[in-house]
Length: 225
Ligand code: NI
Ligand code: MN
Image (tube, rainbow, N blue to C red; front, side, top):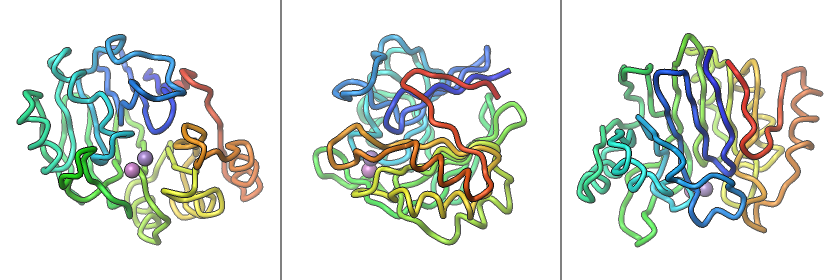
């Protein structure tokens, strides 16, 4: 049994008793996060793009734990130069890691580092862990190829950005669920900042009205999968 925990924003923790995997661990400076980076010992850290609210504390966390950052080639070069262990992937490419498979998927967004330098192209990630498939959209606008992702790898859990302004808002995110067809959709990337203050329950209600399942997780709330 594995556990998926919402750390807030786009930050997630997956623990299966053997491995701890963090995704987009933006904790320090995140007004919603209730977990500090040093409370997590991550074996692997997946980073979808270089923006500060996604790269977050990945580098110090990887250096502290000895864990491996998994991200695009450009972000991995940046992290390696700062002394973190990291494995490069790029869009469309996947690899089997000790805990399961990770594939980077497209995302329509930007990916500059906080200092403005180039962070490659932004990504989402498709993860296969303990027989389940989780699709974290990263930061993205709506795109029709989401349908292809869900068609080729039936998705159990879709972690989908709903906050509008920088990414899909609720209307587009509901359509994304319709395209991906996951067993369960969980919203993310909302309320952290004033400009993404949308109501996750509105998203969940609309997804359910479309005949699919959605669940809103509180900060540090977990589900088992
Ligand atoms: Ni972003
Ligand atoms: Mn973001």
